[in-house]
Length: 399
Image (cartoon, rainbow, N blue to C red; front, side):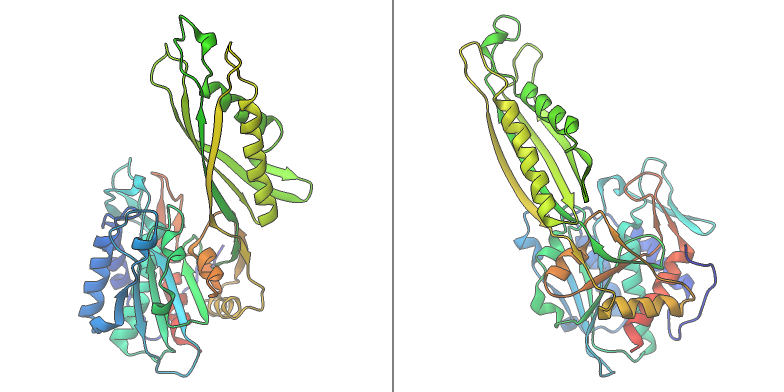
């Protein structure tokens, strides 16, 4: 954990001003694909601070995404006053459904949701606040800085679509990149797993469940046999096969309309993850194998079988940056300047850094105070948030 000491960074916004910006951001609705109100707030705040409208662009990532989104990624580019490679600061704007309607309130050194049945949305409005605080600190106090790009992405929570479809030309070819999306400010994530999502459709044969069940082929039975096979053979949940590690999950099942009908259609959504791309592909093959095998086990009295179809896609591939990467080295130095030791690690979920790194922009991910994300018990650690802001200003100004 980070220590509790504080430091001063010349020119950074006062904590009280950063807090007010954060509270306003937390109260703005913005599910994945519906981030327009967040963009409006950022745009208006930056223009009032003196940003030229020509420095702000929307990249149209929403038009290339499979999600029908309102807006694309918001990009702010600032010319440098110091000669150094361009640096990019990143945070995603969208929140998960449990956070819709959040009303943030401060309780001691925490921010929580006022309503007990609502998440806070600190994932990732805290990251958005870190970037906005940093940009305003530079603009209002004319802090010297290298060329900078600020990237606020969309649709992270539903498959990293904003980072996947980012307009690279708008970014200005950054050489170092720092993403805020996590807990403790000393957290430094240098890698993440890869994720594959799949839709599985099982077509059986309908029949009357009371009069002639033997004439049908139950898609539900096929699904049940396949899932049981995956569990029995260690290909569901946490997967450990020798030195290889991964996870899989059957997360969504839709099927059936009545108890007196043998169900002829089931649709399933599942996923597979691993830091090893070859092992992730193996997990996907085992899932497909289990469902095909199950389909051959269920026959009607006439010997008819059901059918299985698969439709999958790679959401993001795994990555791991070397300790010598400039983004890792620079972020480590900024964390140490705050009196903390960098807590290096890799994560088992996807990050915008997955796609940015795949696009040729090696990106590390830092924390900004989030806790218990995606739940009604979510809360934000204010000390970690303010520490994250100081680290971000250092990364944006110290070369």
